[in-house]
Amino acid sequence: MGKEADPQIIAQYGLYEDSALQRYMRQKGQEMAALSHRANIQYDFRILNSDVINAFAIPGYVYFTRGIMAHFNNEAQFEGVLGHELGHIAARHTVVQQRNATLSQVGLLAGVIISPTFGRFAEAASQGVQLMLLKNSRDAEREADQLGVEYSTKAGYDATEMAGFFNTLKRQGEQSNQELPGLLSTHPDPGERNQTVAQLATEWKQKTGLTNPKVNRESYLRMLEGMVYGEDPREGFLEANVFYHPVLRFQFPVPSGWKYQNTPQAVQIAPQDGKALMVLTLAQGTNLQQAATTTLQQYQLQVIGSQETTVNGLPALAVEAQQQPQQQQQQQGSGVLRTLSYFIQYNNNIYHLIGMAMAPDYGAYSNYFLSTMQNFRALTDAAKLNKKPDRIRIRTVNTAATLEQVLRSFNTPQAKLNELAILNGMNLTDTVPQGTLVKTIGQ
Image (tube, rainbow, N blue to C red; front, side):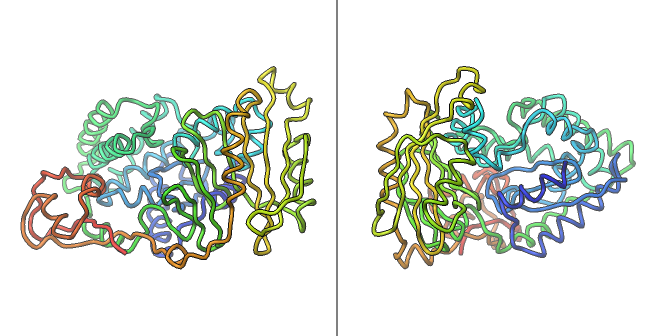
């Protein structure tokens, strides 16, 4: 199951291009896997190029996002979460997960159209959830916490730090007004979990006779120097309600107030109410007609009408469609799904922009779909084409001060102070001693 899903996950999210960090992840992962209850299986460990704070496991594979790597403040936190994910594999939670559901809709669009759970996907996109991965039960999370403490302690690390990291996750969730990251959502209360993990850490230190547990703050932070932070503009970015892709050199508007998620395979946008969804992907085919025919067959859509047109000088084909009757019946009376597609030929690619909503809601959203699709155009603005990513910069505190004073001394904008406090796992009022390393954001 893991070998089948791994290429799909990599295709969906991409690997973070930093050979040293990937090597670190593999090395630490293999060392801890050898201590786990399933040391006999083959493991792979990967860092995904996503700024979402998440970590997850499938049989034989553990994935951390660069977003979660950025938010660890020492190696002990990293090791605690690594142990937690290996705990899921050891306890076979991931096998249960995969048996009961489909992993992170890689074929998202097909999943939306042929499944009665359209609303769930639209709702997820509307909340800006970028890694729509399976969630574990509360009991599974508690068991993985226990194993994470056990494994990281046996590896010589201070598992109390893992408890502290839950606070970072909780604060981040509150800051972004989104669902809590995957490690927390639908799971035990963070306060209770924090207490339990701290208590388990004390017990395991006693059991193993660990008197000088490793934290390794400085060495871990120095490793993060230069890491891409937040969105990587080379993969596409949203600015003032316009989505830009500097590498593929296109842009299109996003309706005001709609949430979006961006992966190497697709851009998805949805309104707050989750009653519609727009997706941009690449279509297969050498010409517009072939691309449209292949796509409509793949998603089992029935054409209502189609028209050859142009979009800002680019050849295009507009197609309205709905679910074929047999698919509709499979949905057990969940209603007809209506879609509007624009296939647009540009720079040797055929782009497919599709908007979808259930038939009663379609009229309310069709103008939004048209406005986005008819304003797809070539990107020529040099400032957007050359936009550089933000990166983590590790700075040394010259004089003891509060974190807020320290961050201001490094020219951190007012609007970024809370974000940087969470990133450093501190409060703005905390006193930071001279010589301490802190994370800042620069280019």
